[in-house]
Length: 245
Image (cartoon, rainbow, N blue to C red; front, side, top):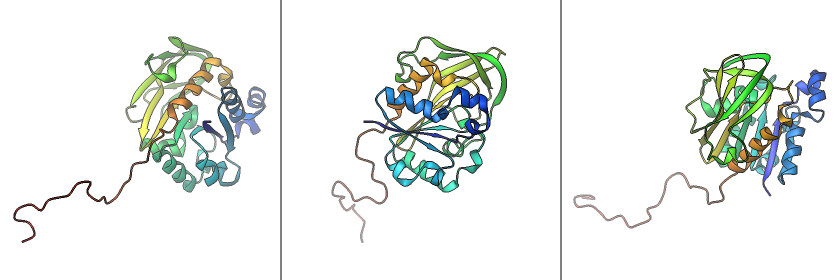
C-alpha cells in the first residue's frame, strides 16, 4: 500500500477561527482523509511535533510527502530540510501545495527565489488543463473552476518545469503556471497552486482528484537504486599500445 505523509505547519488552524471552521481537523487532516478513502496509507505530520514531525522513522516509511506551509517557513529546521532533500534525491515523491512555493524544501530543490505576485480578493480561478494526456489530469475536464481563491500571478521565479500540467486564469486578469512537474535525482516533484487556507479548496472533488493522481504519479519507481562513485570495469580493459612503458 502506498504510504503518504501529509505535512502541514498547522498554524492558521490554531490562530484563525475561519480556517478552523473550514478545516476542523486541519488542512493536513482533510487531505489525509480523502487519501485514505482512495486506499492510501496516509498519515500526518506538523511543524510543532518533534523534529518538525519528520523523524527518520516517518521519512523512511513515506513514499510520497505532501507539503503545505505559509506562516512559518523559517521555523523548519535546516537539518530536516536536508534530510527531506536527500529522501527525494533517493526516490521519495514530493507534492508542494499553494504557499509551499516559499518553503525551504521547494526553494532548495528549485535553486531560485520561487517568488510571485499575489492578491487575496475572493476572485474566480479557472485552472486550464495544458497536458490532457498526463496521468495527473485523469478524470479532470478541460478546466477546474474555483469560485473564490487567492490570486498568484506571473512571473513565477522557478526553473522551467519538466512538464506544465495546469495554467490558471484569474478574474483580475493574471495567469499563472499552476501545475508543474520536476525531476530531482531519483525523485519526482509536483507543484500545485490552489489551496489558500480561508477557502474550502481541498473539499473540491476535482482538486482532490488531482492530488490523488499526483500521489500515484510521484510514487517511487520500484527498481534497484543507481550505484554512484568509483566503479570497477564491466569488461576487461585491454592495455593500449604504448602504455605502461
